[in-house]
Image (cartoon, rainbow, N blue to C red; front, side, top):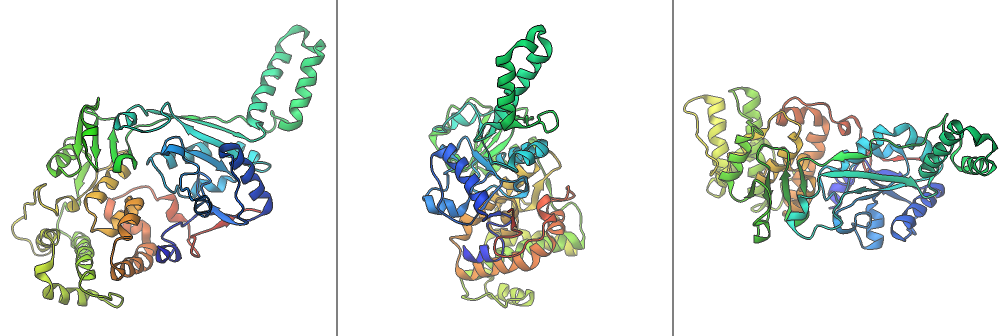
Amino acid sequence: MMRLVKAGLMFGNLVEVRSPALIARYNRALKHLIGKETQLTDFHVDISGYSPEIGDEFGDTLYLNPNGCNRQFILLTTDQKTAPLLNAQFSTSRSILRNFILANEKQLFALTAREAVAGELMNSVFSVDHPRDLLKIRRIEIEADTVQSHVADGQKLQTMIDQFSTEEDAWWDDVLIADMIETAKSTGDIHRNPISLSHRTYEQGNYYTQHFGGVYVFHDLDEPSVIATEYSDRFDGLQIGSVINLDNRRKVASFLNENELVEPVINNKSKDVAALLMQKIDFIVIGTLASKLENLDSISRRDIRRLIQRYASDMPAEFHGLMDLYRWSKEGGKWPHITSDHPAFFYTLRASDHEDKDLVNALLAELCPMDFRTLFICHKDLFYRAYAKWPAAKKEYVVRFLEDEYKMDKAGAREELFGNEPEMEEDLITRVGPWGAVRGRS
């Protein structure tokens, strides 16, 4: 994995923490949440305050996410809003945290200037022991405050101010006035610098979770459905419209089509379509060649063409199906009819334009594992698990490709693959060093 780290393709864009003051604040929040402290003198954190170095120190990658269900978080700076979320058990967690930070950025900036903000993404389920527990998760509430309870004290002070302003004899209430003065010592002027936090409730609509081997939950459809990566009898009897085994390609294709969640990548004959198909073909070829050759470092497009001829009989069905489409887009002729049973079928699709576009593209990436670029963009956790099992030659080639070609024009690559979409925030950040664009705060 160090190849990925050094190339800025793993643990990228984390926030560096190294000043004694910030480490002390982090430890106070950590002690408050889980009763532990770190002994490290520098580390990096994601949007939730999770640190991979501290995870190694504790031997627990879920130290801020017990049971993988109610994610806890530590905010040292609002700069964390652009960091990734590592070890995400639910695909919605990062967007919820980011929206919370953006909605309360001014207040959180003031709070984190003196203390860390600790909190939790709470739902009514405390552990996910059975797939039916996933269907109970429909709303996420954020509970957040400093260890010294500045937010709670601010609310308390506001209540006392309201009481003082509305009750006739409040001027003579020495106890109330004394309490107001004492509370204001910790909160400061809450009229000039409000410290109440808003937008604490978020709906959990359609999402992906890593629980039970990977499950796609589509609540918000006319016929709610679940797609299970590792189907078992535990999914039988779920109180939802349908449960689909990811291996049942025909049912998955029917589900995506009936709900208008996908569109063909190939909707006309053009140089762009032909180039996109050829790149997907190259990725499939590289996977085959990596098992035949020890070194792919200097392989060129011309070399790939030559090696295809040599190893044509070893190429998988995905290769042959996409080659038929490539010839059609390049030369015309009869349209190659590829059904959902064909291994190349899902390689020809992308999510249509809807609010769950990222979720559907993640599902498609899982169905097209040989397209390593799409897998990296849309389903990073699955990409990292797949990468760990690849031959060394493929690891080297993939890292070099992603570093030299994808990172050079991420926005262009995404537009080519997924169509027009708002420019992603992470694409605006220039990554440097093995941790990406590391930002510290002292």
